[in-house]
Image (cartoon, rainbow, N blue to C red; front, side):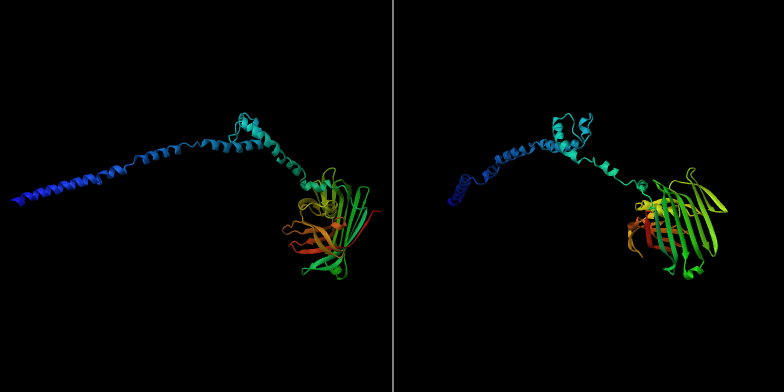
Length: 355
């Protein structure tokens, strides 16, 4: 009976001691209270507030104001306008007025005022040669040529050509005589005689009469052209086939046009010139090319090539004007209808006299 009562008593004492021990240690009851710390929460709230403060508008206004003032200075009229352009500042703003006044003085020297001067110095196109027609031919002159025909693409000497001129009292006469030599006399080609005469004006040569006499197989083919400048009319053709045409200013004949070009060498490019050969009256299209060096019996010469634009199924002519010899014709070439070289005459002698 004593052991049964003692056991509950010891049990009660042990439980009481354990409860006191836990209460004095205070371990797990205080853990949630020690972790909850309000000061960090308050610090977070205070850091969020200054992030909203920074006033950004001020630097934006300064950055955009300066380039606008420069734009207005380039175009001063915008400052005086009552309705300024949308990209410029209002004219009433004192800042824009102050900043615009200084740049204007700096930009004025860079204004594109010299441009009209450059345009004024531009070459007056096809009218430039006409303004240079203040000289005339030497009073007398003579050019001798070797006459070659192309056989198998090689030039072969077949004759001689002599061109002479005389310019007195504002009039001129041009003559050209071509004759075959040696065995070439037996060919179909015979003498060729051309004559041109007229006046010399401030615009150059103005032909009044042109004649051509070409002998082929012993028969003479004659043609002529009469220039009526007062009525602007041209009569041309063979004696039995006369034709009439309007006479444009600057018209030339087959002989005079070469010497007309020597009086005022044209600039590089293409020009048009009405020309008659006695049988036909046509507007020649002529290409003026860059100067080149050509080999002649007179030596290497700097020459200006002037070439008629080739037409399908038609003959054409090419002339080289020697810069060292008053741009006189020193090489003349006739192209066949198929575009191959036909005949060529090249200068061997040039004589110029003023008496």
